[in-house]
Image (cartoon, rainbow, N blue to C red; front, side, top):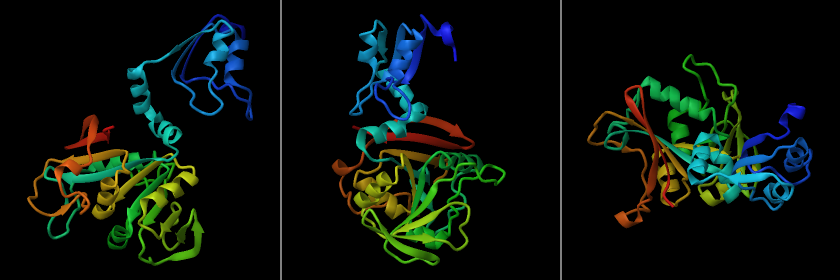
Length: 292
């Protein structure tokens, strides 16, 4: 679009320009033909085709790759899930929890509405609207009958709704069309859930579930509960991120936000590092990533 005005200019991009032919020509060729003389890019192209920095360098373009700080910033800026899928072949899995300061998601009598405040719950719905799929266990689904939709503060559905999944071996009401996808028995759930697709995967094997999600071309998956499903996912090392909403509240006893018998000693704990912390209403929103 810039035409001749681009000649002699500098291009600043997130990903190294491609050097392969697809539905369109290589970006590297287009930049060279436009007369760009300097290219700044953050992430190198790690696909089998390879990126176009070398092609551009050979044609006199100065190519400069970003540093670790810039790469970290880009990951936080919205490309984290895509990059994770490119690097690992599977979607990024985020565990979302809401708990008191002492780690409980419900009181001893089971009451949990509401641990966190209205602002935190609205923020959690916004996070839902950004992912490809949302997951709960059969126990949580049967007990709470959650909508699992992403709604704005006025109760309206966001334009993007994640595909909703229930994980577990117990049969559920409203199941139709039993099929096998990626080796997993899969049922659509139809009754009363028209806002977005809802599927029951009849398994608790996370390796199979993540393979299914990878085959479905998902990049970002959010797991919301219950405590045993979340605890099992965390204990087995399949959680890449934790999204934690912490309320300024002490219960002393109750239902843990995550529970697993697989971790019985401190050296086996799953460790994460803080990425961000912000105040949302009266609560804290913590974002953590797996500590490598």
